[in-house]
Structures are given as C-alpha cells and as structure tokens.
Image (cartoon, rainbow, N blue to C red; front, side, top):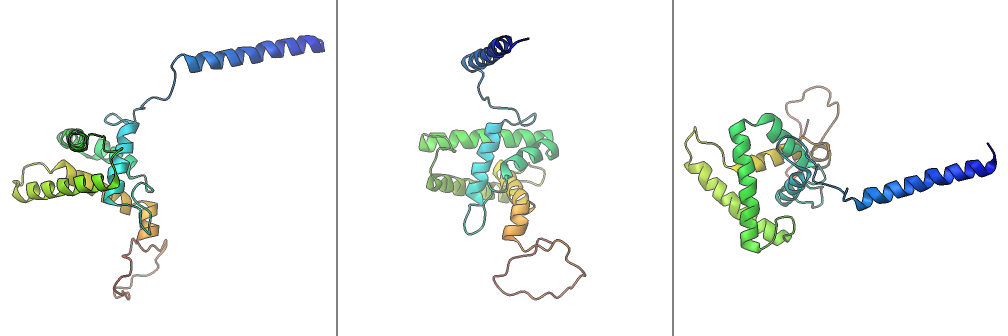
Length: 189
C-alpha cells in the first residue's frame, strides 16, 4: 500500500466519522430526562436538590445541594419507603409543583429564593397542623417526609458531617464528659 492509498482510505474513514456524527446530531438524539430509578427521573432529582437547598441553604457552610441530597432523596424513597408512602410522596411532589406554579406562575426551579422560601414556609405550617391533628395510623404528610430525608441525607453526607458538624474519623476512647461551649458544632461521630 502506498502513501496515496493510505491518505485516501484515511480520508474516507474520517469523512464517514464526520458524516456519522452530523447525522447523529441532526437526527434529534440529544440529552433526555434519564430515569434515575423506577420512581424518579433526573429532573426530579434536580427539583429535590432545589427544594433541599431552600430548606438547608448555603451560608458560611455548604448547603444541601453540595451534599447531593436530591439523589439521596430519590434513593431513599425508592428503596426504603412503603408503596403507599411512595405514592403519598410522589403525589405530594406533584401537588407542590402545581401549587407553586398556580401561586407564582412559574415552576419551583425557576422561582426566586424568596418565593421558594415563602412557599415552603407555608407548606411547613400546613404539615405541622396536619401532623398535630392526624391519628396514629394516618400516613405522614409528604412535606414532613421530604424534610426528614433532606436532613438525614445532609447530615449523614461527607459534606454535612465534616463541614457542618465536628468530625473525628477515629475518635479514640469514649469520654462521657467532653467539654462543650455554647456555639460549638455538634459531633457527627
């Protein structure tokens, strides 16, 4: 094989690659809302991240989004909730989105921090009233489930345990009367 044949075949190969890539891009194959698990899509995880960040915002310490709490919520609801609780949770998230859209004429993700905070504060009041009046056998309010998984996900994450709480990887022996000053971080370990 001579140099001309190599260049000719290489050009054919490269041209096919370029044409193939152009056909792929133009055929509508773009990013889609991928399924994370049986219950949730990637867009749901993004919504959970935004809700969790509103509950635990970034201040002088990282917020819930830095701890990837949205993915944790999706996993916990899928793997640990009963089927009836999963239904309450998923229906509740739909009603949260619909209520926010009705009140502010936009989605929760596109809402301002002030709108999100005000909306979730009202939802928290509703949840507290429901929890106070519910019977023992009644299910929890979906927003309570959401808050609980947000807090659990954040404070058991590396970010929450090391940046917000005090953390010693190997604490050593048990000391029941460790010194604590007002304002100190709580211990993660």
